[in-house]
Image 1: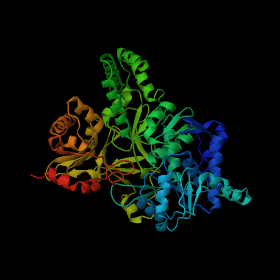
Image 2 (image 1 turned 90 degrees about the horizontal axis):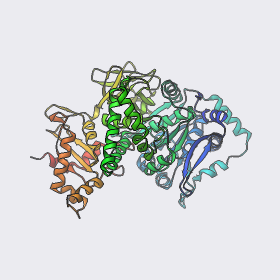
Image 3 (image 1 turned 60 degrees about the vertical axis):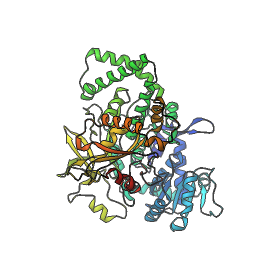
Image 4 (image 1 turned 180 degrees about the horizontal axis):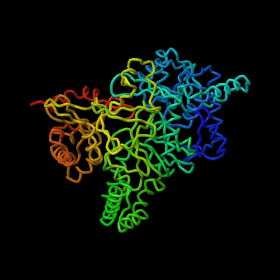
Length: 603
């Protein structure tokens, strides 16, 4: 059943409808088991949080911040804010002190919720620079507070401090009554690959429109179990989670991203949204496991995936019936090899799995369907409240496309090839950024996505970010993400950054997958070397050079990597080289490796 109310009342309406049914679950790592939270308990916690915020003076449409990894308390706080018409601003759990300072001051935050020790320490370290901050609420009771701390309180104490007071109750009900779609729900600061963060305003009206549009085309229901893997801070996971709650689905909150594979096996979700990198790593893991199997097992897995690929690409994706012989063979593998593969991974009862956030290669997309995961490729931005387009169930799907526009969302391509979007899910603007807001829209109201693409037979395709398109000194345009993506689906490459802008040819900084590389090296009798030595070894370079040539064989000659440097250490958020969504900050990488890059272009 679909729940239609404003986000301020969503959890309460769900509790009225579902009562003691499980709304969400999370793992107690000390006891080693998953704990259920009913809709009624969820509603009670949200309501307690709302009134606790009222008690400390949070006003309607005032900004509060949530600085935490995924936790049930995160949801209580966000929906608690919605319940009193406050604005929830999520910070990534890895946000730096400088970024916290900027965002708290920009939004004039008085109340911030923090998850664990790292987030608490970060906030406390910048208190002197955040003059608006008055209250810190800590989710994790094990967090050690500083001796000089007179602002913080633990979350359970924050809730217990709520008195039975008719005045607070009356104010709570008044806020609930006054809640409207014009209210701001979230401000999501985009980390970006350059410059300071911009706060994207998302209103309740945007969410309301997006939910209604998704309800028309996506088969989510009360029987679905949703694994929350991406950070709630990410618009993809945040909007998707709210959508799933409107459908009565059960959320499984993954508290530790590094343990996702274990969580999947324990929960066995029917749906999970993720970025392409997750499926790339899953694909590499499956292929690696297959390589270590017996000859018969390797042949069976390879044939099962080949049959699945043909079945999906040539028939199912085109909405045409497959020949009887192929269909029977596909069904046989579905009941045996493929079913066992999915069960091993924790995906033995799949509904569908949305994928967005970066380019999804057609080979990974095909693998996902061949293995029966029912991947749904899509495209969206923070500024569009997530979805712009995705593969519509029951409609033709072309590998490599990013689906069809969401019902009610208009998409067109500008003369320069930029994807433009218009619709009720598009943001009203950037917080406190009138100039940037004006620049983000055309004169006739279309939002500029910054992505280059095209539309063919009703399906949208993306080729590159405008600002990421490189032009060589020979006048040729290069799409670096396309080239990088070809490398990172190979098990021997972990990260790659292409260099080409205003250069004579394409070069790359490459971080090998050292586990795979060291295994290969040992088989070649190359032992006892450090990672730095491996990166310099000519035999290693020749081996990886051959792999690069194979992977880029379908590229034009001017797009191919001519020179590369192997790096012994990965690009990291700590060094400022990755955004919180793990996208490369090219400007930072180029600055950090300027000497290495210049050496590749030296005559």
